[in-house]
Length: 503
Figure 1 (cartoon, rainbow, N blue to C red):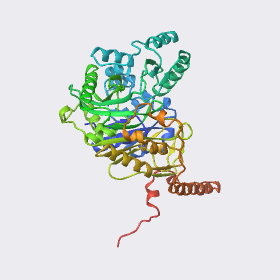
Figure 2: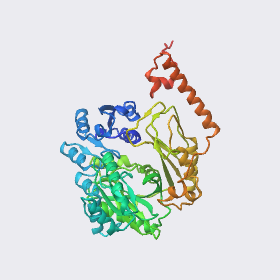
Figure 3: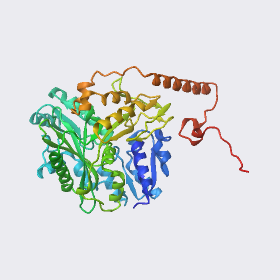
Figure 4: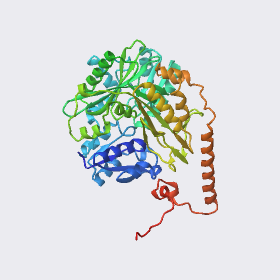
C-alpha cells in the first residue's frame, strides 16, 4: 500500500478520498486554489499545498503544477477524484513519465475510452449494441450537418473528453446545429480542456442505467451491479439509486456481462462505469465508459458493502481483487440526492456566498458525504456540488421515506440550494412508483416553484439573519472579527474556556 497520496481535486470528493486513505493508514496531500484556502478538504488532509489562482485552468487543471507538488511532498500516487483531470489521458501519461501512480486506468485505456468515437467502434466489434452515431472525427460544420442528416434528428451533441452532462445539447432541427455545436464546444473546453464533440442519435424517454466495474492488474473483472440514473436535469444526474426497478435478473445478467466485456476488450484496470440507455422495450445500448469514480458510487457501497475508494487504492497498489463475481451480492435499496449550490426558483442559477448556518441530517440508514461547513464561502469558479445525501433501506419504500425525512432535516442557510426541489421530487407519486425516465424532470417539474418555508425554517432564517447583522455591525464599528469566527475552528466549537491546574 502507498505511504502518501496526493488528491488532485476539491470539495466533497476530496474529503471522501482523504478519509478513505486515512482508514488505510495512508497519508494525504491536498491541493487548493486561492478560492479554496478555507476549504474543508484543506483542513482534513495531512498536508495542503497552494497551487494557483481561483480559475480551474490556473489551478486544478494545471497538470505540471500538480505533478510538481506530488514530487515535492513525496507522494507516490495521485487520486484524481472526478471532474478536472480525472479523465485526461495526457495527465495520466505525465504521471507515468514521472514515475507517479495514477489511481485509475493507464493512459492507453484512458485514451481509448475517453475517445467516445473510438470506444463505440471497439464496443461494436465485440457485439455490444450501440446507439447510432458518429464513427469518426469530423472537422467542419458541413461534416457535422451531413452526419446529423445520416443519423436522423433529433441528435445529441456530447463532449468527447468527459461526461457529467458537460457540453451536452439536444438538436431537433438543422438550423439549430451550429449554435449548439459552438456552445457545446465552449462548455467542453472549460470543463475538460478539450473542445472536441461528437453526435449520436437521441433516444426519446430512455432510462439511464450504468454498471459499476472493478478490474485488477491480473485480468480479474467483476461488476458490482447497476445504478439507475434517470432523474436528470439538463443531462446532469441529480438522483441515483440501486437496484433499478427496470431490470429483472435476466436483463441484469446480460447487461453486467456486457459491461465486463467492454472493460476487458479495452484493457481497463481500476474502478470504472459502463453506461447504457434502456429503451421502453428493454433494449439496451452502450453509451460510454466513465473512467473514474462516479459521484453516485455511495449507493453501490451501501448495497454491496464494498468500499470503492479502498478498492481503487488497493488495485493501484498492485493488489488482486479479493472476491469473485459470484461472491458479490446486493442487499436492500439505496438512493442518492446531489446537493447543489443552485437556486431552483431562479432557473437553477449557481448560488455562491457564505454558509451562515448548517444542520446535517442524521439517523438510521443515512449517510452524508459533505465538503462544506458553516462559515465556508462557496466559490463561483467550480461545479456547485456541496454534498451527497444517501439513504439505505431494506426496501425502496423505506429508502425513499428516509430520504424524505433526511431532506426535511437538512438545512443550509446563507445560499440557495436544491434541497427544497429534491424534497418534492422524492415525494412525487410517479417517482415513488418507480415509473421514471430521463424526461421525468422536464415532464413533471418544468414549472416548479418552491413552497412557502416552514415555521422552523423561517425561525432559523431570522436567527441567521440576526447573526449576520450583528457581525456586519461589529465590522462597521471597526471591530476586528477573529478568523476563528469565519472558519471551522475547534475554539469556536468549544466556546469560552481556560486552562486550569488540577490539584
